[in-house]
Image (cartoon, rainbow, N blue to C red):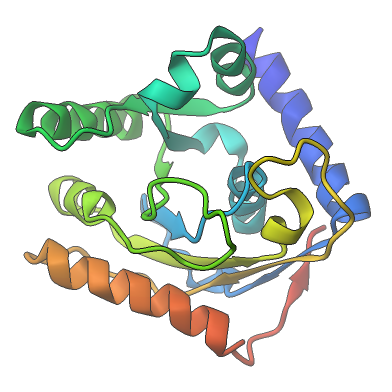
Length: 214
């Protein structure tokens, strides 16, 4: 049943982001062939399908790291989102036990179910459309799993479906994919590099050709 719902969700997203909120992508050629972690600014529930479509990779190969207290404590939200995509439940507290459990959950997904992860470094959706301070969780998971971080900047989802809104407005969506950030031994440095890369993608729209969603 989940496979059917997931496929129907993919078809809906493909047509939605082709006809209603046209999606263009820049930098897809920078994605590595090996497993990676997509990290972007976060303004909307639209961000996750936008990111998956932008890669050209099947939805079932992605797991989205999702806050347990938001997605899983509400039965309707849990049912809807979990049927449509792969959610990886994490605790948002910063205890050592929680961090280790979060890393284990991500590792199990990458090894057993899919290849790639989606993690939002800001931790929650922005209320203003501005990029918030980044947390070190993505860098820590990248280090533990030996996966590169892929910086991505998304334009347009805040204008279309910001937090508190329930119906998307017509809006062109643009996705800018940056160069991979390889895992090293310093999660602080990786976090700063990730945040700077995404801000640079926002400021400087690089000259790479934009590709329309096919």
